[in-house]
Image (tube, rainbow, N blue to C red; front, side):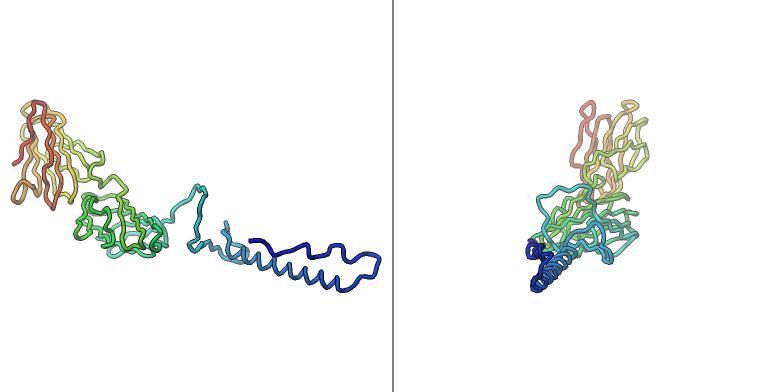
Length: 304
């Protein structure tokens, strides 16, 4: 805006020293001075009401609400997201976009998420939710609006929008909407629940394969060694790899819960030669072998 203050309407040469001066000149100067003071007061008040401030003005409270005004063609640095700590919770939990864009919670039981105060349609809203799962018995339910990209999330039942976790730990999700929350895209931001996440373990004889890790590799020292693979979560991928053997007679037999190659119950995968691999995927509550790799003599693991 252009200031209305006009210093040129005040006659700085009036009154003239040493002569009789018309009193109208005094009145004009006083009137114009008063008018300029009023302009100044109005403009300062307008600035106080509308500018962004580093701290509150004396006697006031800080309010940098920009009421949806556009900021453009700028460079920013050292900005942060407001963190909203929901605590240790269970049941229905509302993610309030207006309160902050990074929410955290720890499960005390199963949790159902809801969202509020997303920006109006036409503006994209993005919020992060960090969930620390304290028990694999605790599930996480998304609202029905979370319908884009959800299918690929490991452990998610697409018909109910409920995630069953394979392991305890901290999981990070990003939720994005451009239509006021009617349709929400979800992105899993951490590797822990990704189907292939470069995580692995060395699995000892008689051990249970860790469902939180993608690959379990093993070295044998005897014939008839055993191991187990428990029920997974839908979409989960598990790789079993025969890494090394003590002698050529060694074997490792995995008992697999909910084996897809059986009508019901458990099945087995038997490894007889180092180098053999089996890749399984948990589909509709069963483990299916989707690939096998040969051993040193071109033999393959067997199913029973």
